[in-house]
Length: 268
Ligand SMILES: *Cc1c(COP(=O)(O)O)cnc(C)c1O
Image (cartoon, rainbow, N blue to C red; front, side, top):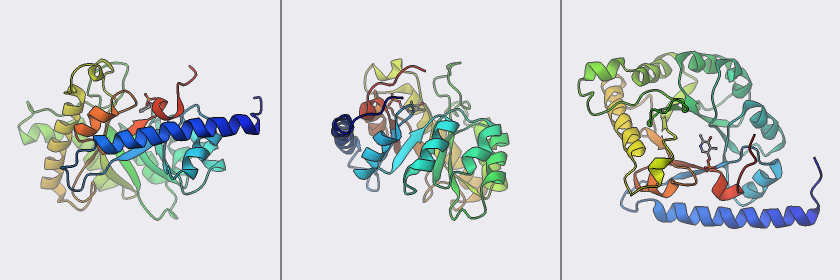
């Protein structure tokens, strides 16, 4: 890799901070002001981008960063500040759980889809960790083969017996009862890209909300509000560069923005 000159780094930093400021302002304006306690977390998705890009945002107060690849995350976490909250948003393989769990400032895994991976993470997390690892279960709201995630719950599922035995409910139950070092924080989706081009209503965002509501109801019945979510709520992670404003208007708690902050990524 060629080394960037100081001038190049300074120009790059200025460019990133300008984009970051713009995205922050758009996030702020899109969060519904009616929702009394509603604030949104902006996760800056830094995959393929150099540590210097992340450092620039960090120095501007950005703490939450998302990465998709275990090796890349491990390498970056080693050289970047310990105050960073890393969110893993890539495909999770159980055999990588150990490497992820060893990253001390790993804040969340947003892409859990199996009890096997949950068990592996719970077992690998070091006992020195003072707080549980936040977990979001990934839901394939668009039903596309190219996307991973468990099936959504929907309003057709109005019998509680059906909800109780659905994959997402079983995984949530497994986290709550078998994985004390994990905390079920919410649900995540990517959704279909075409959805974000049309009008205001995004069917995938609505499906994630329906799933959250049905799951929360089931968990409340089984466990009460103490052992999952944040103050009795399951958070929603939905919205990327092209659709985060629509997602926030629909009630998203966590948006994951890459291109909008760091510019286009080189194809792998
Ligand atoms: C890459 C990625 C993002 C960011 O996408 P942009 O369109 O660049 O904002 C968000 N979420 C997930 C799961 C991703 O893989």
